[in-house]
Image (cartoon, rainbow, N blue to C red):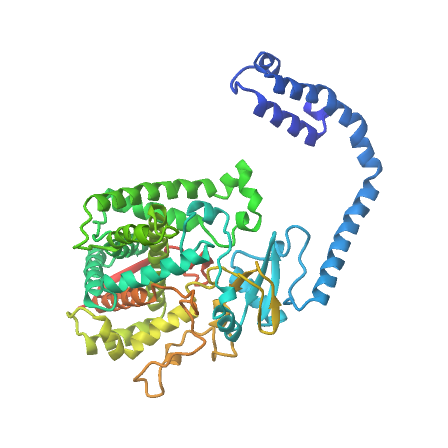
Length: 555
């Protein structure tokens, strides 16, 4: 029958099922397709010819007749749900929070900048509150004291299953929920970084070598507006490459470009609070998975997987126990050592692969985002930039490369770095924690199996801890005489507790060397016509749009 004579919903259902069931997609009219139908499909054909017409004749009219009763039933269900939640909360010592709706919870009322929404909810419900997003029960830590209280308790050290993140990197030692693996792998990574030169001159020399390459690229633009993210991305991942692979790649190297493109694509689509995390079943719906970019993330991860496997296999073939070159060498030797003494070890090939992916993903993304914020902020605050440059000239001059030990002699530069990381809070919400057992925080009972989020954005913008928190004021980190840096106990850019970032020391080295080298060689400014929005967009880090910046060589 004609479409105008058919109920729209039934028409779409019938048409969609027919197309899906037809084994030959490009055949002619529907009647010509019957010769291809299997037994199962013939039954479906019966459904279309017999059952659906009966639905039109019998069920649809009854729905119309009982429409008011159905509406009443739905409203009664919602009311019963609300009453049940209220009674449950009244009888327990669970943190308070907004009500939300059945199935979706509070999800319809949040924006893409979740840290700002949590900050507003915290003003109403206090330093510890709860919120249901989709199918996930979440406890949000809003104040510094409760964040430190929770993250120093062993019950709060877990990681939740993260749906697509878990599927993308199933053995992830740092983002996965295997607590035993995390303890072993973290200990090994921290020790490996020390053995490979962290805290010594080796890593600092490698980073400074990469900084000099980056500065040359900026000089080649001759002060013209530049998307600094493009050369900064390969430069950042080269620092990780030197640590993990024992080598750097030229910016135009095909392997280098593949690595950066896939890392960018993965970081763009991966988010902690994603729809497939809030509704785990949603990723099994094909068209939804495509729209959520889950498939694109899988494709990117497969490319990275292939690239990393090639590097690991090449290292395995040339491995010399007497000459350890990099992180992969150390890990391969540890795998062999653990085989003999610990059959239940978490050290194996797939864990190495996942560890490399974690190190690249976390190590390059967070530091790159931090340095981008440094550049954008000094471009937006030229007076601050001039003061930093004056201090650089006093300590380094115009030619000497900075060394990390110079940080102690450059309090204003240090204070500017600290203030940028407070003012913009590069990671506004911590990587999700998960309660491994029942515990308490802030006087509230927290059951086992609850997702816990610390709102570092609020901790860094809370007027209880900071004077004029929305203002950019590097002086807040200086002593009264301006000769030394004074850190606040409320300052946590790399998280806190045992789950704090293991790469914090490496990150500070990179940020200081890049920041001082850029301002030593260039005046940094936005093009006059460019408008900049500093609100940012929340992913895992707080990202900005790739703005154009002028790097004008200094005399």
